[in-house]
Length: 269
Image (cartoon, rainbow, N blue to C red; front, top):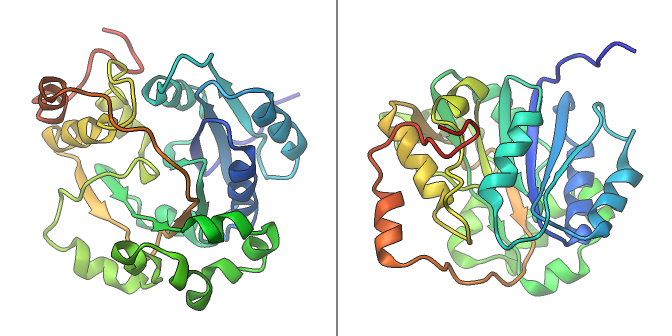
């Protein structure tokens, strides 16, 4: 059997456990206006629940779901995401987390704005614990979740603005700005540009800092970071996060790096 055609986008979904969250994300992917997408699940050591969920979902999307897994040895997102990228097939990569539900035009907006030597970076609406607990799959399929009145009372005050769909603001917000910060749950880039900096630095284990370091290497190499806030919208399911484990010296070394390419990324050396 000949291989399936190369997908228009590869969506890299970083997960650890919480198959209930991942199923919501998969439903939101199924409802996308842009459908020519390959889903690659970057699984940081989950138990059998995630694999079983992926098995139930095979055949429902345009391209088969790829499941890249390694054993659970703590937070090693940098490693598993790099491995997921290596297995992906599209020339353009979109990165999200497995707890972030996508607006139905999320992929369309990343696809429409893409340019060589650009990273597109968006933000998210942080849902509270109550709405996260009672959110249904039908709330996603019916686009009820996208209605302002539905989520506004249950979102963090500082990020409510991130839920407004106003794509016409792109030209104003991106004008003269090339250094917008990267959020690991919502950014996209051409494969060639991601590989040019050699992906995530795999020396960074434990939550936090991996996106800061990747951002710095993009900036150092002359790749522009453009905002797609107000158009590539996503809704973050509430959960508790462990504190960042890094000491000040480690943070300075990786956040303030002068590197353009790490020797500890997808390609070693």
